[in-house]
Length: 106
Image (cartoon, rainbow, N blue to C red):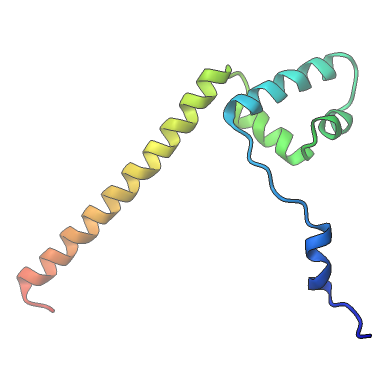
């Protein structure tokens, strides 16, 4: 019997990463506010919500005073913005290539 390598045990111990919707984030932040108001500390709140403290503070910065529909709208706008930036970069690249071709430097 050969010894196990570190990579062989990864599947057993790895926790899959869960993506939360903006509505879920806002709901969890509201729940965290209630628990913090009851006197619990941040570590206990994060443990109950099944998130890390780093995630809690990142969400607090990003979604601080938003309502669920505002958070969803923000995510939609960010997605649209990324798409538009990608399209602009492609157009600029194409424009630069056409300039090179017209100069005859190909």
